[in-house]
Length: 465
Image 1 (tube, rainbow, N blue to C red):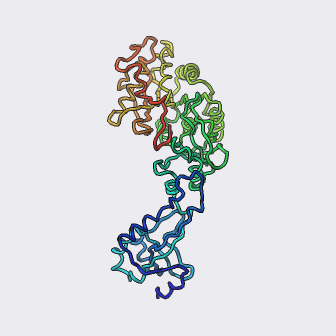
Image 2: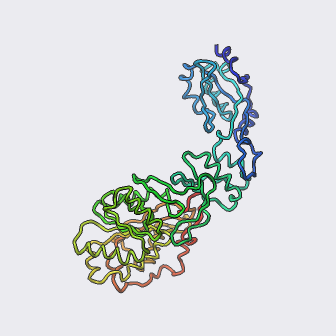
């Protein structure tokens, strides 16, 4: 019955005749043509190909239900392509496309259970640009000695790439492919250089799509609006933002020294934590205020546009001292999330308070959460190095009763980690005459062992922090 109805198909169905050569030669055709290699413009028509002798089985509805789970591992898969399709010209019949690289295995599985020779056919299949994955398209275009960029960050409607020098001649075609292939993307940008300005945002160029860098993103239940070209935002830090906010309790106070557009400050305020949030970048400050309004936390969030050192010396100090005078409940958390530079602000705590203020403040010592980059070999202990680094910048050892936590935030490169060190700000760190001006176990010239390239480094397959 099936054989007589197959004649009505407007495709070529031939008998199965496969061998090792057939399988391997077919497999080599399941990629885009390489005739476009080395071109720095996108020729959509060049991706149109016709594959011959694609294996398939044609099954009536009842057989499809019976054998679908056994056939599933052998499906032929392409982008925007259904492995199982109904035959419009034959009611109740379905064609199941199979991967020629796996055809020997599917034969072994099914030949004893169905009339294999009658059901198995080979057909022609036409593919176009829409059927190829982005890495397949780029692998066909880029020269063989240039690695395909497969890692990116998505911020709202923007794809953010970090292309290497050898990929730059093909930057526009790379941008166009990602614009075409990634859902809900309207703009593709490339970072031009490492973050090297006082406001900690990087220069970028638009490779494809709309000239629009205004974005809206959601993270941990909050909405953020900002101009991605003028502020710093990393979508890979959402887990860390959640972890630190979760560490704090309702009724605590957060002093966010480098607040950005508010990924720590806004969700903390939503939790019932009073927040003093600061950022030096006027654009970040503008969007911090806006995001406090959008998320309806203006009653708990006060924004500042100051240098972090001044904010610590004046506003944070004043608020903590006033809280002690009023015997306010809750803990204070000083968050210093600028991993390339935050450690340079730790010297603020030396001579920060008078002797009388120290006694009052340290009745309930504030918690400092400082972020840093640690650069070392894989065999090294990143946790020990992070502790050592913070001790050097403080000028004091961190005893076990002061050290609350050392947390590995994320990997930056093969030999570089972002770390968070959380500790109590105790009397010995705040008193006017430090017990040790410098720790002997760390050389003053050893910062490169921790920071790497000015605290920033181009990652090979990952987004720079």
